Image (cartoon, rainbow, N blue to C red; front, side):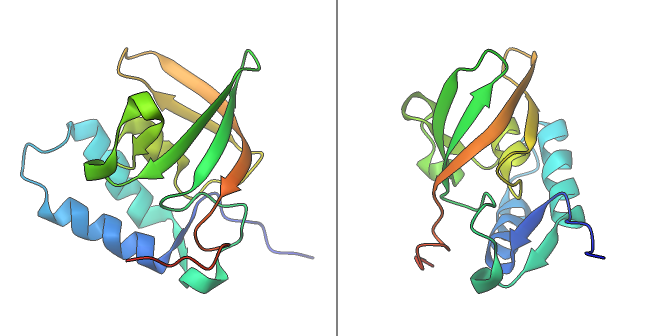
Amino acid sequence: MQAPTPDRVMTDLDHARLTGMLERLPADGLPQEVEDAAYDLIDSAVTVPVHLIDSDVVTMRTRLKLRDEQGEDMIITLVYPSESDAASGRISVLSPLGLALVGHRVGQAIRWQGADRADHRATLAEILYQPEAAQDFGT
């Protein structure tokens, strides 16, 4: 019998970087619900060495395809806050969508609350590029 797959998995490097970012934020740096969601992710995700992460898991700088409930596709890249540009599909990891994506696998449902305060749902349809799968461990 195979052990169940955890809901969220992070690389040890992503875990350390996200933790460090949160610790350096000013007290009023994020809305409280976003900060809480970030710490919940850090506390609950299973961490694995960067070279052992499965290629179907969203990590930092992953380019992916989301498919909404109407069948429309959205191509996005998960980035650090300083690199974000929603208009070009570069979504901050510290946004509600970014936090909803980290550690999920292809085929899983993603839920987040948008800036419009509406609940959104989509399926993680495909990983187009994952740095770890490409042996791109960056800086």
